[in-house]
Amino acid sequence: MSVELFVSALALGAALLALWLYARFPNLAPRSLVWAVVHFVAAGLVLCLVPDASTSVSAAFRTSFLIVLPGFVYAFLASIWMLRLMQVASGFSR
Image (cartoon, rainbow, N blue to C red; front, side, top):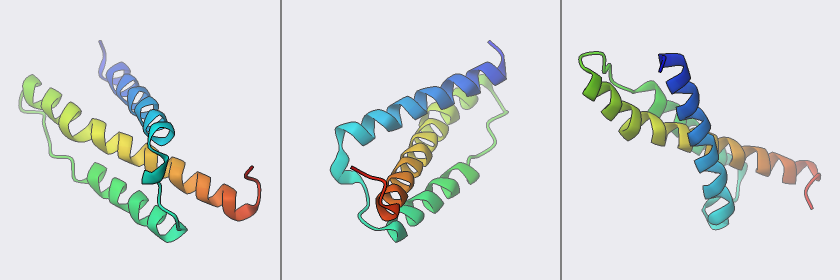
């Protein structure tokens, strides 16, 4: 498996997990756009602070599944929350 395919599969899995979390736990969503932006920035910081794991294969897998996957899930979930709040603010919600 190539690195590109692994990262794509990891991102797709994270997006699916984020969609499931959004549907399963709707009360976790922030009520204001300010808190949605705070979550979005926090997710970006988590993904920016990923350590270099090129020393060994096991370190790369640990970093992928313990830091990158949760960071991707958080980033996708924060994006969903922000899109939902902007939809409600614009008046296009049900």
